[in-house]
Length: 115
Ligand SMILES: CC(=O)Nc1ccn([C@H]2C[C@H](O)[C@@H](CO)O2)c(=O)n1
Picture 1 (cartoon, rainbow, N blue to C red):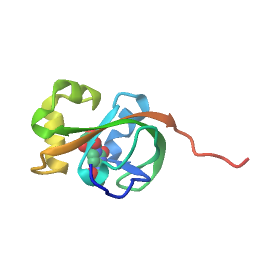
Picture 2 (cartoon, rainbow, N blue to C red; picture 1 turned 135 degrees about the vertical axis):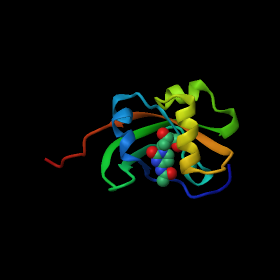
Picture 3 (cartoon, protein in one colour; picture 1 turned 45 degrees about the vertical axis):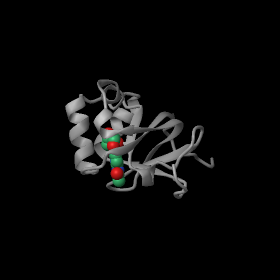
């Protein structure tokens, strides 16, 4: 991995929010620009559409993976079928072969209160 800017937040499309909060979705596949995170890092998560915070995640690992090497196991961790996952990735990252799998767990779903 090169020396890109460390990510300090991450966004997901709103349609994936419930899958993330329920624990059904435990990985996300991103391009190189969004791969600069490290194991143990806590990231605030917002919706892509409205930039609305909905949880924090802890990064468990970041692993390079090729689009052509995606398996049913990757799809299951995205709570999708493999054809669905391939279609989603092609829509977001058309023609991109080199992806990065970020495995995560949800660590916080409520905004901190000062009271
Ligand atoms: C801006 C941007 O790229 N946002 C993304 C990228 C990916 N996702 C989801 C879609 C799939 O479930 C996985 C794999 O790419 O991650 C997303 O929600 N938002």
